[in-house]
Length: 198
Ligand SMILES: O=c1nc[nH]c2c1ncn2[C@H]1C[C@H](O)[C@@H](COP(=O)(O)OP(=O)(O)OP(=O)(O)O)O1
Ligand SMILES: [Mg+2]
Image 1 (tube, rainbow, N blue to C red):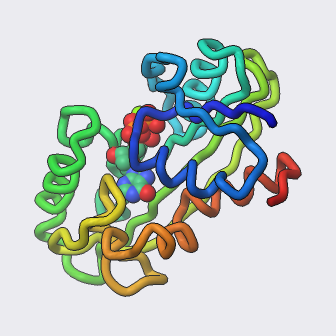
Image 2 (image 1 turned 90 degrees about the horizontal axis):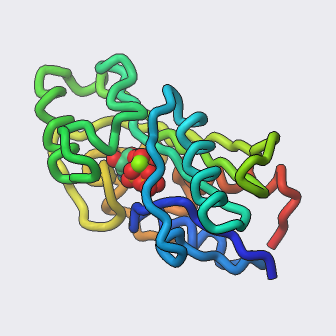
């Protein structure tokens, strides 16, 4: 069975990706299993950062790796927080601080002008210096709520109202979120390119 390293330190992503990959014939290992430290995410796009993270994990483990770079782009903020979503309020990975800042930034923006998209770019490398990383991009469209609701998921889920669901993404069960999410769409496109089937 082919080992695949998931190049992320985000527990929410890890759980979703492991669940999405569960029906497939991979031995999925989180990068924490190899004591891989975080890559420096200094790219200017989700694509560059996903490749940086995948290469870093592959170099440290000597195995094929898949990374997820994702974030929320809000139309009224010119696409922010975008690639800076994880550190929008300053401290990296403080989900509550990040979504609280987002709501505060949008207090003057009326309903109907609160469109946003979750983006997920997945990058797969066969080895650290792979000259042809496989890339896939998934988008999930919605609106930013006026207040946080729900307790499932992670990150900005409590303030994201998907256009194709009732309520926030954090009110969806994991099984419902994986039918709709940017991450699920990206993975489906990635697997098609890799010609992997369940
Ligand atoms: O389905 C999602 N539901 C809610 N929020 C989400 C989702 N997907 C990404 N997000 C947010 C979380 C974080 O604020 C940022 C990702 O930042 P990003 O750098 O890609 O990930 P990270 O630093 O948390 O982990 P890592 O780089 O180790 O994969 O977008
Ligand atoms: Mg990150």
